[in-house]
Amino acid sequence: MAIPFSNRYTKLAAASVVAFILYYLAISNSLLETPRVPFQDLPAIRDDAHRLPTADDFLPHFEAVMRAPGLTIAQAKAGCNWPDEGEVNFQFGPDFDWAREDRGDWELRRRRNQWHRFMRDGLIPYAPHADRFHGRGVVIVAGDSESMKRVRVVLRALKRLGSKVAVELHYWGDELAQSDRDDIQDMWDDLRFCDLSAPDNLFRASSLIESPKVPNLFLPNYSFKTTAMMNSRFAEPLLLDSDNVPVIPPEELWNSETYKEYGSVFWPDIARTRPQNPAWPITNTACRMDEWEQESGQLLVDKTRFYYHLQLAAWFNNEQGSYYAGFLLGDKDTFRFAWHALKTQYGRPSRWLASVGTLAPEAYDKRENQYCGHSFAQHHPDHADGRVAFMHGGLLKTMDPKVMTWQRTRGGVYQVYKRAPQDENKEYNMEVTIDIDGVDYWEDKPEGTKAQWCTRFRDVTARPLDEMIPGGFEQMFEDAGGYWMLNLTHH
Image: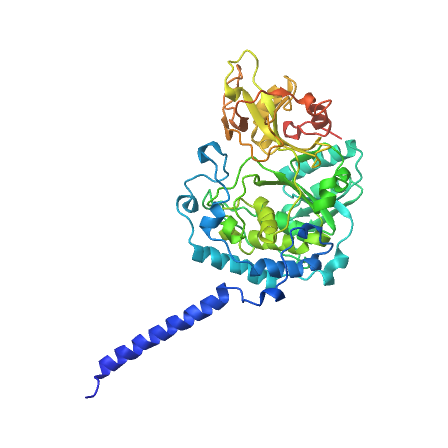
């Protein structure tokens, strides 16, 4: 008996669907699973990979890294077991989708294999471009009028420290006014301007990245730092934010034992990374309880050794920025997770940061918000040294000029500091928040005075800053023109 056409068509369609599914699964597995080879032919993952002398010496290590079995989200989360996560300061709140519900292992495996393919097929080779990089120097990303005023402060501070370090200023297109360029050029002997939009750059910045916290807020500068590090002529660049003032000559950092050992120094932030963060399994790394998120107001890297690591960080932050911005805040942690992905240890200071700021008048009642921390003091990386190396005024820019003028009559904006009682114990957690300060302790506060953002170190006593920085920092800040927003003239 002949099969009716409609039934034959249905069976043919069903068979086609089954064949397509089998073909798709076969292709998917070939894309998502690293080809297996006999164990004896596998290169080994090196625990001491950070000691490899050149970028190309890492290639066998990378191959071993990419052939290693992948972690599931459950396995990655198991690395952190804080008794009460409510007592841990995390960068992202519990309301983010990936914090409420774990991302699926299928998605994480696919994303992990994406960066594997980039490492195999998308890298710019080091050897043909090695002669582009030489020497050591400071890399600053700036360009708009306000950031250029901050750059002037940095240059004056370097001059007062007796530093002769070479400086590169990276900017985008026409954002840098010619008048600012001429003025800055006259301030420093060894200064070069680098346009990140120029077509001859080795590495190009990608399009704007939308903030995961504020829809329709785009964050172009977050992709500029990784791009600047790649394009810098320096073989050993020190990345520095324009609002980050050196406290010691930067030349001393290249001679630190930490940098000599690891070829990199990443300074800490105030937050931890949640165990559920997709970056852990994507980079095949178990959550770490002894690690703070990275604060990239300063970053030191030997590019002759970590040229490919920087490219992966830039790939996370540029080409894939829209995805990774959902759980890595801007550029800062793309560096850290690139090193994690490539199973390479990085250098870090022995001491956690300290908070620096102001105290309310003694007549004001002794509430916690009498202290306003607006800057981070970051330390020399070596345990044997431990001096403050940088003063990063990230929240100082939120201080109303009227408040700043008033604080200058009370000793300045750099009055006191707060330091964790166990600041060399990397697993120690203390209560830290960033919140709004209405400056209500100013008895004669003018109408219209704006609130400011402050870092709070709870249950820690504020101490005079000159205990941590002999001679204090206020005079250096004043002499370097730090109060430029008050329209003061400095030379």
